[in-house]
Image: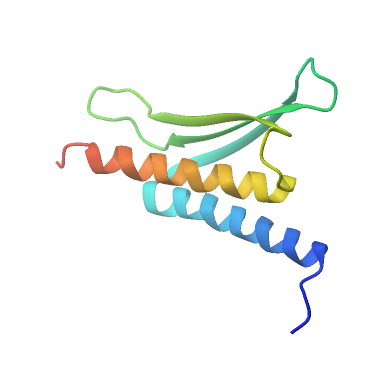
Amino acid sequence: MPRKSKTAMEEGFMKSFWAECAEIEDEYHRVVVLSAVPTTQKGVWSFQLSASALTADENGSIRNDKLSQRYPNSTSMTLAGFLWSMARRLCDQVADLEDQRPKA
């Protein structure tokens, strides 16, 4: 079987990134936002991925979970792979926090 092209691999990572964000939005009723800001280091970006609740909790506060990382960093992956990895970690973080919440 021939090896996947780099374009096909990037496309796969982007689809997986999208799927992780969709899971956060659908399962946990959050809005996912990705932001990228250039740092003072040439060629380095600071990415933030956040998941904000659509409704307030019993205390009236809106839950906002976020994850920030710089790219490129010590991992040797593509940008699409990096974004997917961030979304996966954020999804795990949101799931863990939701599991810890007291059930109504």
